[in-house]
Length: 563
Image (tube, rainbow, N blue to C red; front, side):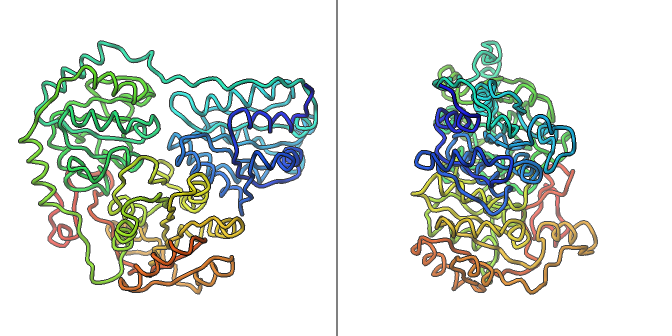
């Protein structure tokens, strides 16, 4: 049947099972928006306050569900406003499809009104991108984009469509989406046998889990594998929830703000088994001194990650879930009671603690965990509050912490929380933000109130750019350049002006009843939690230092910052 390009776009979205789109219209994309209007019974479009919010909402939707998130924007500034959200998804391997419109083909390359080469702009931050100049290629391009976004290591794909293509007609034939196969052809038996031999020879194994375990839906296989290896477990920020953090084997996050037990344990182990992690610099600290007593095994779907940052002694390339299934089927039960007790002793010696005499970030996060019993989706922005959310909320299931790990995007969490809540209507969704981050995209509170999306926005408000100030305190002689936010902005009044219920909390005693009321109201709520400007995230490893030089506030005051 003959359809316009705009109709083909909508029909292809339906083919792919898309029922939710986030975006912001404009002149060049009007034909597509006209078709969305006509198909509003099948595809719900959410108008965000800014295109960046749309990209983050699509990202949050994808992280919470495992599906492909979809966002849209018009040409020029509309398209460029998606860039930060696309880059965020790219760094964390999140499958989204961004659809933009551009000026008509005859106007390309002529500095036309709102023309931008968005394909060129996003080439380094997409898994692939397309510009469609022929309506006859449109349907297959959209189908290919969704397949690329999902297969192998996921990631964002951009489709830029010229306006005349959205108006031109072509023959459209519906197609059933291709089944995405797990990457197994790269799993070699010799690699598997080598890894099994290394596990059997180890007396102090340690399992280190990254976001790849979540992306491949490998939580069950991971739990079985950890039990068979009989090893302690730590994770990256992106890997939180892949392994139940209330399990006795779990020791915390690894790296710059990881626990002492995780950092010291990895430094003492004789075999580090890395499952779906890419070795960020925030994890390894000093590459030359990372896990120097251990052989390292890396399991990853992307061969480019093997030996990229840290040299490995063995690797298995393939889908994490499939690799773990194979290892679980071949590996005999291991037993390491002395090693387990050594790690348990570290956990008792180095607990995560904080002062409970005043309202603090850790207290806020821990109270949210207690009230929800850990059954909530937590999104965050980036900074101190993000680390506290990682340290003091216990994630029992995958896809319950949605945060910008690789890019470190301030302004990510609010849009992501909207996308997550739309996707998971039966789940409580909290966005935990610092006041600096909240300022970035707080206009998305208006999106939440427009559609009555009952997210709970918690602002850890210390009136400074907290993490930057922490570095200035520790490494820059307390020269607080451009990090003090002592101004007249009132988040409670701002939230109320945008239609949300808002509270200000200044004491520990006020927090619990406010949180409980926010949950009970089931409407968009903003909670402004006032904490001290010099609260810090501990433990910490100085930039570039070995992770075994992990120090607490007590260590810092005594001058002891080494193991």
